[in-house]
Amino acid sequence: MEQFETLDSQIRRADSPTGITERLYRHVRRRMLRRKAGLVVRQSYRDSGTLLNYGAKRGFFSDHMERKGWKVTSVDRHHENRQFSLEHFHHRMSGMQEMSDFTPETFDVITLWHVFEHENEPERLLDTFHRILRPGGILVMSCPNICSTDAMHYGPYWAAYDVPRHLWHFNPVSLNRLVHRHGFTLMHHEKMPYDCFYISIMSEQYMMHRLAFLRGMAYGLHSWLVSLTRRGRSSSIVYVFRKTNGQI
Figure 1: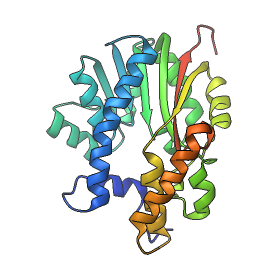
Figure 2 (figure 1 turned 90 degrees about the vertical axis):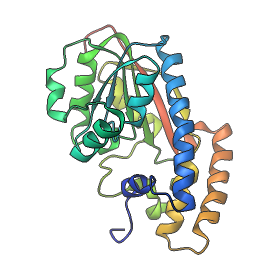
Figure 3 (figure 1 turned 45 degrees about the vertical axis):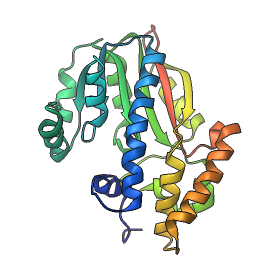
């Protein structure tokens, strides 16, 4: 699928002023920022604290949480993302090399929004998160679900495969087993309600179907309806893990 635009490049293009998909993405992003913030507050049992936004991209979530009174540290490997955050939000991001300098038990919350599937060394990263989270702190991560309704429907054209940028593909069972081995307990998981629409639209575009937007919206609705009663079939899932007190 190299001839098609990647998932990441479409998201970056979503700030352009034209195109119904781009306008829809910006609207959904605003709603999801509020939803993500609410999830963090409910699951951490706190209205403010220290938060590490790992793989922060251009910093929209970091800025949103800072405005809500959280002390936010952001990490991203791409210089253009760090520059965007500095210019638009006056928020300085760290590079990945600075992760080793973080003091143990520094953060109340660590978030990764569609980042973990990109990591070269996910197990080493989980060990780092366990070291820098405070006792009882939470790790919040969202990932595409390889067992979702839309993944099975679109097969090799499923946009969330995003080859070669996505190095790993998880379902709820496989991700929980991996993270649990590194000192975390799954406390909560829920669907990301809009991903099925966006991913279905892009999958239709990859298949070069006519009326790709309408077809994608229609199948996204079907996927969303299935997920109401079968959460494990959701297009993307957000997981909340709590750091255990014992040693890993």
